[in-house]
Amino acid sequence: MSAYKIEAGTAQHIGGRSQQTDRAALYTAARAPGYVMAVLADGLGSAAAAEQVLHTSKQLLDEYRAGEKANLPRLHDLLRTVAQEAHDVIAMHPAGAGEPQATMLVLMLAPQGQAVWAHVGDSRLYRFCGEQCIGRSNDQDYVQHLVEHDKLPLEAAKKHRSTRMLMNALGNRQKPPFVTVGDQPDLKAGDAFLLASDGLWQYFTDAELGMVINRATPRQAAEKLINKAIERAKGKGDNCTMAIVKLVTPPTEAPSYTVQRMGKAV
Image 1: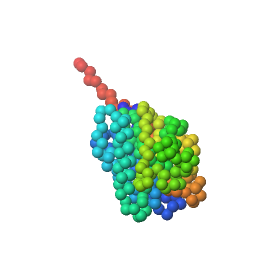
Image 2: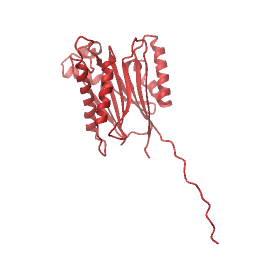
Image 3: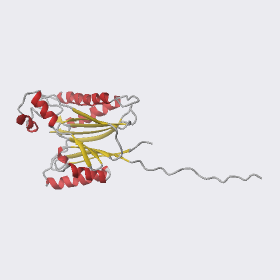
Image 4: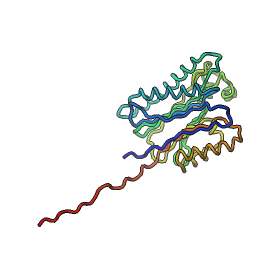
């Protein structure tokens, strides 16, 4: 029996915007039984780029063939390829027609009890053990990249979100995407992951997110978080989108045997 079962769900709300440009989805692998993928993309200006992230993720996942054991470097390469191919297609969009861009979060769970993820942009991936947040994605690696690779002053690098030329996003013609990958081995019941657009995470502390996700099903947690985000945004919030993946203890199976009366020999 598996040490855990997966409970997962996606949810979103338009917030105070005129259109919903975020996208989120959960996928299983066509040729790799037991592999599960969660994807979140926050589109800039329109949903076109976010939809491309989901399309590319599903296409490459369906082409993936797994071996007997999860190969973490190979999974890292798969997620980097998702980012690069989605970026290339989005960047082919005609110049001057809005130049769509998108953030990207992709989380992949292997049946051997391992998680791998890739991150581009200001959407966030959170990891929880019970109610405790044990890690989350951030911009620090990209800021360091701008300082070391592009030789930008630290203060200028920290302003990359407000500068379109420096923005870390798929489809940005001025900058190739900077992809951060990570992994977590030895998954167990009680672990959980949250993929969140900035229309959600900016309204919560890590502790608040951990408490809500730990104490509710993904559907219940998503409803509570969206309602609270809307309340705190006071009508001015961005699109609010998330994917929640929880690992829970499997239910105990009741014995299925029956007792039969034995015949007495005469």
